[in-house]
Length: 332
Image (cartoon, rainbow, N blue to C red; front, side, top):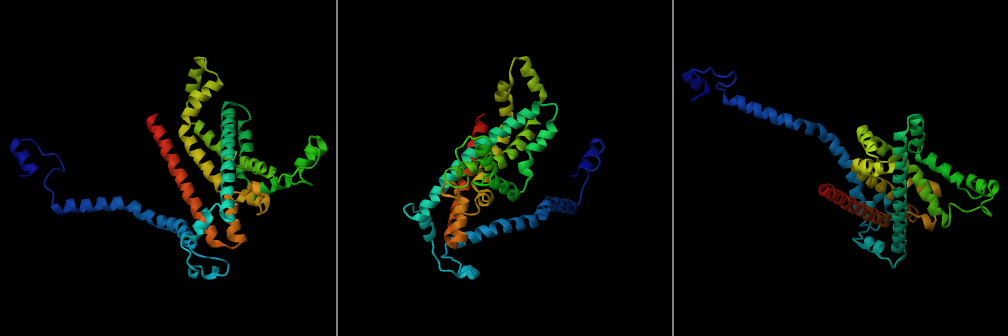
């Protein structure tokens, strides 16, 4: 019995649009809704396919190459190189062999550089962003000045540091030795133990504007009323930083620290330009170790195995970091 018939018997007029409808109308409406839901995914499909091809294509090729005895002689037809299986991984992970020992040393150096750079760049970014947030005059000019290292091309920025750190003609030695007399003679900054700290300084100089930019954007979401109310309660700048600023920008800090760590750990351009492709042992990052095995000794199989292990390590670190931060967020 239809709704219209029931309404007629009860004397109540039927609501418009609630009468009998053919079954085909409902079927067509359901199919239209399904097509409407599928349309966004169809538009995204070409971009998704291209993204998968661009990213996962080289990854799969590198994974296959890591299982081959691939040198410059088989590079033209690398898929026909002799099969090595897990032999390259055994060589890379054998710390008693020169290749494994050198890779492990470069891993430790990279980890040390990453910790120093991330901690210092984040601290400078927070200090710069919080300081500019309180300024009333000259904030735009200083903001632009702070972002210059981030805007400069990598080669132009790092090659300038290379000229500054030269032993005989560099400006740093000229100022410290000739002008101020703080050192007895010209020091080496691009070789020896000082090369490690030179690399850290250049990395910090390049990365801290990114931290400054992210934190400065996060600070815009904090209402000024919170600072005004805390000031009325007697809270000073340091207490406001600990009790208001840092807790409010904690989600941004979680992402920022992870991005800074990944950018620094896999950085290749900075040490390559700074040391000319042949970095000293004290500043040989893992990216340069992979480059040396792949393009200087032409052992592409070993270089691919190192790249795969680096990718797996970064994926594990990223997954663990996200799991820990998510748990802390849920507990809070």
